[in-house]
Image (tube, rainbow, N blue to C red; front, side, top):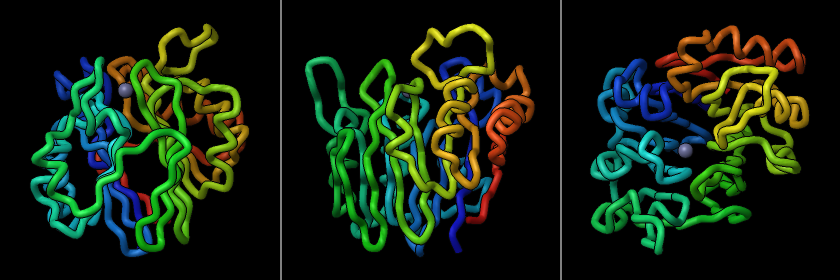
Amino acid sequence: MNKIKFLGIGAGDISMVLQMVPTSSIFCELDGIKFLIDPGPGTLINARRHKIDITELNGLLVSHLHTDHAGDANAVLSGMNKNSFLIAEKHCLKPSEKYYPAISRYHQEIPEAVFAVEPEGKVIIGSLNFEITPTKHYDPAVGFKIIGSKTIGYVGDGIYFNGQEKYFAGCDLMIFNTLVMHSDKPNETLQMSINDATELVEKCKPKLGVIQHYSYQMIRNDPIEQARIIQDKTGVRIHAAMDGTEIEL
Ligand SMILES: [Zn+2]
């Protein structure tokens, strides 16, 4: 079975610290390969609540080192076996002048296959192709296009930039980390807004779009209503993920 399950949906410091809703992480099962994307704080308890067995995971993907994406990465890796894989934006794994890695050296040694990736990279795991896509965020971050019998686009954090659509052609499902609600004013943060997601949906025309990773502001502004704005403008079916939402592909 090919499926996606949202083990949480929250994002940003306020929503995360107050646990207004459980913080995001996404479980995927595609062509028999089970992996988790961006384990925010609380992933272990959220996995247990939603009956996902962390010890059965084949892999882990981490798009960037922000805590709402990588907070539980070490804890998840503790439960993974040697035959697993880890694909992480390179600053999550290697120290640099500005950044300290989010994933410890000890935990990096648990999976057999570790890939420190950057935009335009590619990783092949069994029958799945992971294309690493660029983002425009305030710290180094990537997105993922995951190609198997179905194609999943995980856009990652950051605002829409010209040409981003070329990385997500032909997706069955696109997932958007929409922290910023719809507005007539330009989006001045480097976080994805409903307007940014609308732009991408309009250009990429996925079969289904899902918004998730809600800030305090988004939670207060009804994600279902925000999803409807994208759907009405693009004619593409858009779903607002809730805690535990499961989608069969
Ligand atoms: Zn971020």
